[in-house]
Length: 134
Ligand SMILES: [Zn+2]
Image (cartoon, helix red, strand yellow):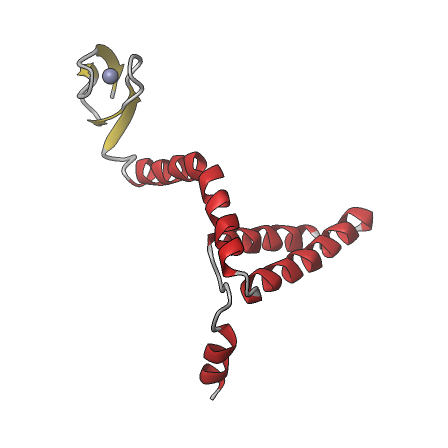
């Protein structure tokens, strides 16, 4: 019953997307900050309300085309940052087994097993050789 209602309600509406998710994270950050005393906390409370209204407006918006364009713009602007974050997560998860180097010539990321001492590293992409401590 509720599910059916929600389904009907969300028909033709934007729903959650990446930009909405990002705004949610912002909302949580400001929510935490809003517990601070004084004017700063109060301003953060107002921002939290504004962000919640904005989120619901986006989720319920019927102008799906325009919202998806906004989402695409957001994704394009944050593409390099999101790639770096993903890169960092991967490197962090393998940090015990591998050491990562960046080729000084072509900036390709190279993965070398740890604990091999000082090594002569050859870039797999451009063939440049440089030394590194593993
Ligand atoms: Zn290289």
